Image (cartoon, rainbow, N blue to C red; front, top):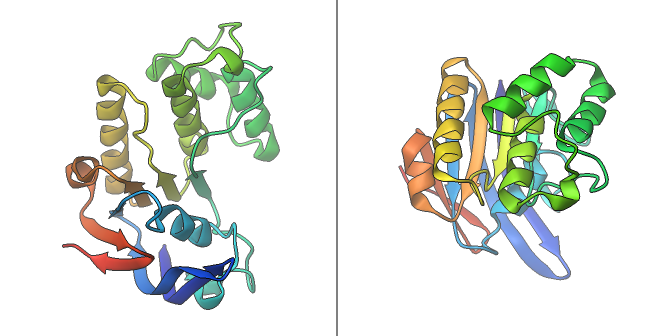
Length: 211
């Protein structure tokens, strides 16, 4: 797959938060965007995911323009900012509810992924009582459980323990070998350096190639 960003700018409340960004993302690669909080990383991912419209410029996926030919990139797995779930349901119940939207994931696969991430699928503990790390794990599981072709992950390593960081890194490296298109952000350069074969810096709304 191919995502092409052309002369993209975004203005919010009179401030230009993305400034004339042009870049291209191709399957079989992990693209890392590193930058300080407020630099525009999350806003760019929102644009790529089709969640907001650009003020200027365009984004196309395999030649189809977002908000014109298609509403969202097809077969997309997504984490934007903090994962948000129904607090009165368990982790499994939240994931099952999401899986029922497209009917692509069986209960057994959800349970297998939860176990892989050291979460107990049969636990009666509601998400309200989850730690930040547990919520992040559920967020990652919902992003990957349908085996998407495109993964857009905003700060995926936030609040994760060391073992889970290694697990996620290895999963993303395997997905790259499988030919998926992956874009991640982090304000920690070491997270990006560990797995990304293309690296950008985001500074004050501008995207700068770093390798």
